[in-house]
Image (cartoon, rainbow, N blue to C red; front, side, top):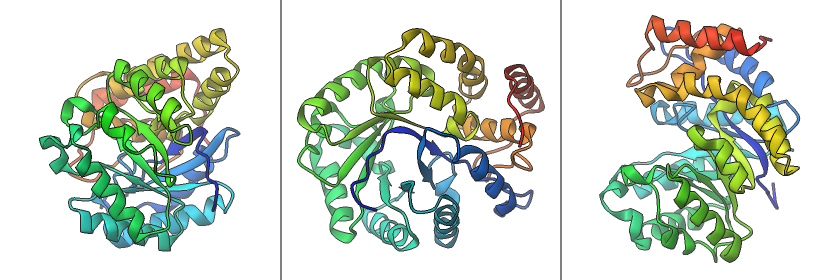
Length: 310
């Protein structure tokens, strides 16, 4: 796929498992039918945090890509998460993703970057250059929380302005001021790079400030609402945005509000299982099942929101 533009809503899919931790492909098929087909879903992102990509074997990552590609066809961009522990690992994962049919490699920061790479452009640029040299894929940068040392400063991101094959930044820096700084810098220096907000706690604020689309795991559970939010934002209709946000708020708080945040994607699975989209909410360790009380609260929010099963 050429001339990929990431706009509207990109759904980051969760990945259902059976009780024995094997992938539940039947549930995954139902999930794809539910969350990738609404009008406004422009692209699909697999093997990321929501899809528990770090727990998958190389063969499983490849099969997720090939099955998703087969389901969505050739018209929707397919993004694949690259979650490496070293540069050679990133190159291998990116080559495998390209061969399996992915259109875009989404580069996650390596754990070592938390020790100071956020403000030193050498590390991000070497990482990006290594993947670009090894594949023909365009690349998106996964901007993570700067408080954890895994998000890059505005000055470091500015170094990407001259890269034609950098097409998007998934903006999860965890700092609304930094988000606006990054947005304004990219609009000035690199307007070809889409900025895709994903900070669940203030998604409404991000799209109100400005964005090129939305990328979120929450689209696995409420794709229709995120598409409505984006349509309202595109129309500069603040009242419609606020109305959608009022419907999203209790759902967002049930998934992301209470600690520990590590449970957020498992909570999405709890909601999807209650809706009948997937069979169960089993995560793979190190993720653990949520408590029964948490599951009851999520089910109550799902029912109150009127979310329908397939």
